[in-house]
Length: 95
Length: 254
Figure (tube, rainbow over the protein chains, first blue to last red):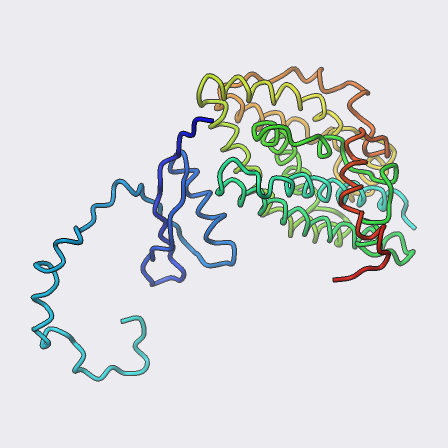
């Protein structure tokens, strides 16, 4: 049987008001509307979500693994850039 | 005992139970894992609804039969489901054609039942309605994509719709049961649901570039009888599989 695959979609779900959408996984669907339906069925069965985003996987531009050095290593030696020296009050969440 | 109400509750309970069983047959065989999960979700929704209807039926009957006894210990001629839900799954387009016609009817009947004069009936309907609104949306989405897809998918979807169409008529049949209950404001007259159903199905089929079969084709007595216990041979096979464990090991529990 010849198999023509539906395009791949990446799924982002926002769990609570005030939080950002979070990548939860991917799925196949013929178009955007069906991707939302499928995301609902695959990823929100246990009441996980308030909002769903789907985006075609091919539309995501990713950094190349071979660029790891130039992109990320310079930050390693600059410890003063990390805000880890500030005490955070207990009440502040999701920082 | 209110015999008419008992009969009507069996219609709702048995129809949701048998359709749930049919849809569950897709598990492990779906055309794509996303579709398989979606169909299984719908099956589980319908099973939950069947439990509520059958539990209520048992209470109304007053012979202390619970949901399990009603589901597992009645033979085909005591089942009151509409014939459409026992039709074989066929290919995925067949299943979705059956699902669309049932879902749209299910939505409108439940919406009317939320206004039932019997608060127990209204409660079950209200709990089911949101689930069914999604079922109807999803089956319509799939029918549109198969109908308005490739030349082959269009042709097979049209055939699927033509094949299941004759069984839609029974959904709108009024008999002594529904007329008695409608008079008491407990259920709507089924014939009254037809205009909304027809308009909605027509919109979906238009979008799917499919031809809506003639309503007269759905009016033949040969495609009716489920709600009075006259079933096609398909139901016997469903019950044989579904009831095997309770028949072979009476009273067995998880």
